Every structure is written in C-alpha cells, then in structure tokens.
Length: 367
Image: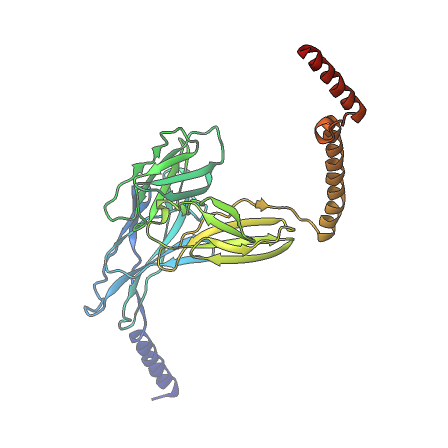
C-alpha cells in the first residue's frame, strides 16, 4: 500500500469519525402568533415539529425571553408547552411594542443535539402608547380606593379602567366622583392583597400602569405647653387599617435643622420663644405592614426669630412709655376728681358767724 493510499484511508476514517460526532440542531419554532386576552394580558403560541431522528430520551423545552428595552432581556421559565401568557403587562417601558424570543432547547443536554435558532416575534398593543397622565396615585379609604392624577392635556377626555391580579378578575370602569372632584375616580378595592393595574385610554391612544399607593397626609397641630411645643396629628383615617405609623418631622429651629421620629404622638420639643420654627413631616407604615408612605407636607411655621438684645431694647422702650402713660392718666384722673380727693375746708370765722346768726334767730322766736 502506497503512502498516498494510506493517507486517503486515514482521511476517510477521520471524516467519518467527525461526521459521527457532528451536532444536530433542533428545528426552530414556527407559526408564532399572539392574542390579547384583555388590555393587560397577552397569550403567545407557536408550532414545533419534532425531528424523526431525535432520541426518545431527549426532553425538549422552550426558552422564552422578553426584550423590553435595548440590552434589557427578561428570561421566562423554560416550559414543556408551546404557549405562554404574559400577565399584568404594563407599559412602564414607554413603548407600544416589545419583542419575544422563542427557542427550542434540550433540558438536560442530550446526545449531540443542540438548541434551535431563536425566533423573534414583535408584540404590539391595540392602540399606540400615549402619555396621557402623570403622577397617578391611589389611597385606601374605608370601603374603596381613591385615585387621582395629573392629566397631560386638560382638554382630552380620559376613560379610566382597572383590574386586579386576582386570577379571574375582569376589567372594570373606575367610578367617577359623586362630589364632582376633578381628576379623581374610585376603585371597588379596599385592600392591597392583589396588585392593581390601571388602563388610561382615549379614542386614539392608551397607556397602562401600576399606580403608586400613598397614605393621606394627616393634619398636624402645634400647641405651646409649659416651655414645650406639642406636635399632634389628627385621625389617620382608614388608609392603613391597623398598621402602625412612623412620623418623621424635619424641624428648623433658628436656622438649625434636625429630624425627629416618633411612633406615638404627641412629639414634645423644647420651645425657645426667641426662635422661629419650621416643620415639614411625612408618615410611613411600620415594618409589619405593606410599605406605604405619604407625601412631604408643606412648610408650617411657628413663632419668630428674635435675639435677646432685641428683647432688651423692646423692654427699654416699652416700659418707660407704659410708665409715662400711667402717670399722665393718673394726673388727669386726679384733676378731674380733685373735689373727691381734696375737699374744700370752710373758713372757721365764717362757721362761727353763721352759728351766732342762727342763735339770734332762735332766741327771737321764744320771746
């Protein structure tokens, strides 16, 4: 056997060995479709044909990833079924479409087979995404939830609806305010056991969102009490139920800033009457409840900034004025009532003369 023949046999054997160990690629999914179950839920399905030569002990699963933003991928759990549902989808990504990637994979790795090429599908919303509201917030009341927002365009009519994350919940309209409050509506929800998802819609646009929940800000009262300031808050209302509240107060005292915290009002602070006090406060639920907080209050002022020198100056000016006025009033009163304070004493000779004249008249009567 010549060297050339030996080389040819070696090459054939190597090629056959390589082909025997070559990887097989799974076919990619086909016929990818989607449907919107409602405004917050979309179901995606596809077909996939199993290769005839795939070993029976190989388990094929589907790897699905959601591309929300460039360089932002959300992988979903691998599944044996050829469909999946994205629940409670909101458009916080500021887009009216997003992409999904579907890929057939072997889990665990099997023989010399490898995963399929990914298939990309673009999911689009029924209406284009439009920024319709800002600062959409809600707070719990006794039997319902109050929601309020800032419209982007005051002249556009908005339709507000919602659903919860409860399994079989349906989309419902948000009830308008009976007191004709502007940019307010009410949800028939009185707890936070399930997530809440809101749809804001016009004839041409829409956006979905998860509202921010806040605690209504209770009113703070300030009272002076024996050298102290007592800070108290009015009834916190039903927004937090039986949850405890933490009160945080930012205090500016003569331009010196400090923050105090309390769980059990009143909050007592030493009172310097020469200082102006500025207060800003907020409340938060304690660690045993769903984390909620209020907005920061407006600035509340109490007292005025005065230096001790100013007080002495005021005293030095005011006290003499008060004394002078008192003396003048005393003199005036004395002058007007001098007959009372200093009665006139008659002349003794005049008194004696009158007595003599009275005696002479009496003697003539008896003669």
